[in-house]
Length: 583
Image (cartoon, rainbow, N blue to C red; front, top):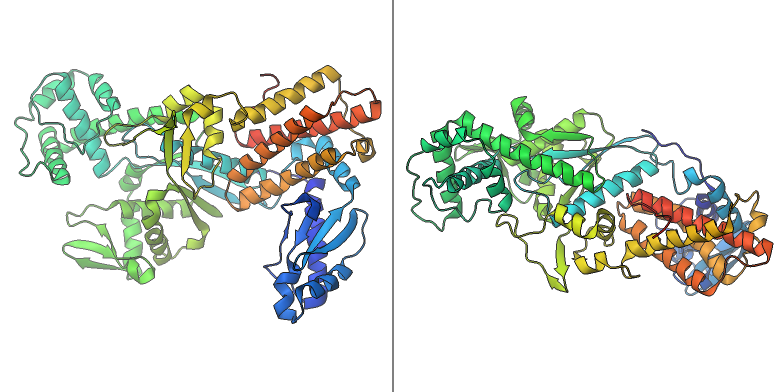
């Protein structure tokens, strides 16, 4: 659904400063310059906004930066919200706004809560966000949870900025990994029934979920498994891949391809049911679940390969069919059809992405694990060779997660079954802390997930600290009784201390943070902002009484904390987290 929202006062403050700077640059240079920025100074004493325009343009205009800064300053028109413009350091221009501008912005927040922090720049464009997409060969673990939280919160941010967003999960239910799962189920079933079978390969799936599922299979299967006879003994047990291939081939031949694939599908569907349930427990609902097997069944994989062939990008070598991806920026050429005639995963992924393009999205976002780093360029090359606009695809890589308990890292291995599942994590620490902690670091940074910290009720637990601020403010508002919405900015004038102005300046940053987090694809900016705002409120609350006797001051402070509660609640909502009224 398209989000339509008004341009609110909190967004307009920065827009106004950007407009002043653009007009000044245009007057002196005759054109805009992309490197000219308007940002918030790290030190509040340096103003509310600052620009680097003089530093960027000094060489072009052959003018010393501070002298150019003065020329730019003279081009800034006086305005109702502007108090003064100062030159600082090597040539920065610092803008100090009237406090009344922040009173107006906070009033606007309270009068239009539904639009607080929202934007229009998405303009209803359709975006597909594909995330998680873990192979259905085992449960989701804590590593998958990071991509799940990041993808869902990014989708919420995009929606808040006016995009039409759909969420998608791609299911790799075909190929070798699915075959390994099928073999693992068969061997565990043989163990369950005490039937003879080979030693369980170390490269198969060792998790308890395989053993538990195998134990639930109907007894009618056992008679079919008895027909498998003697299992082959690999000549080199240490050759894991060769060992698995021999055992898979024996099981497929003994059961028949149809029965083997039916058993494998039943296993993947059982795992998918758990995946759906685990995502739902985290508050994540997918709009689409796309099966690789369906793409193969409907010949979309074959058609994707045909597009590469028609473009003259394929050649034959060693019995296989290769894509000339190295000519398009990849590190080497890639196989699309193996020597036995079966398509590779890469061929299926190309078909899947062409399928995305066919559905008419304006933009496509993939959120992948960092281990897919080498895969990005080959996919872009294949899309380019297929004649579609590869720039419409954006791939974001998520770095790995380490789980810590009592300051010790928990060793994890998916294949060996040594990991903590996402379900276990959510039930131990709760979905809300899990979601929030997952977005406390930029996606390109490694994340240490501290289990004990996630469960603690201290200020070091970020989500607890923010929710506690919400509950504190609700308690204040409850004691105050009915708190009306301010009719005009003048009603906030009594909130005129430096601490209160600083709180209002922090509040006004919220729409800027939402825009930056969306454009940069970094929910971490939202998480960091909410922690900062909550910390500023707690510090204010510990030093300053809100419910004072002076009615004008009391009312102004109630408006201020009410606005903080609203922004914290809106921000937590975008993170998919509740803002409790009491704790």
